[in-house]
Length: 96
Image 1: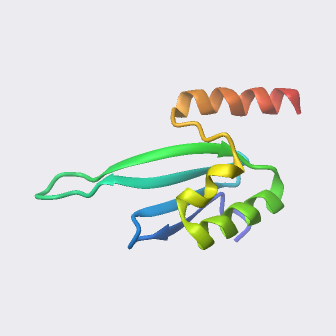
Image 2: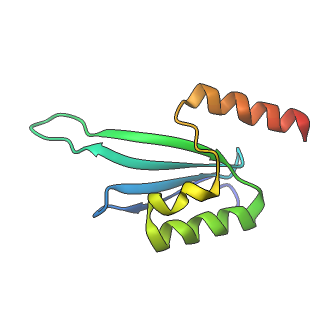
C-alpha cells in the first residue's frame, strides 16, 4: 500500500535481515549476535545506512538476497549508533 513506510526482509536461518525505512531514506541491517535461550531475549547488532532513491533500495535488497548482510558492506557507510545515524541523516537532509 502507499502508506507502507517500513519493509523488512529476513533470512531466519542465517539470523539476518534488512529493514527498509522509506520515510527516512535509510536501511538497517540486522544480525543476530546471540540467540535467545532459556527465556532470555536474543541479542542483535543493528547498523544503519542512508539510501539514494528506489534504485538504491533495489541494489541493497539484491545484494542482501545474494549474500546476506556481509554482501552489504561495500554499499554504504554502516553506522552502528542510532543517534549518530540520525545526525548524519539530518545533515544530509539540510544539505539537500
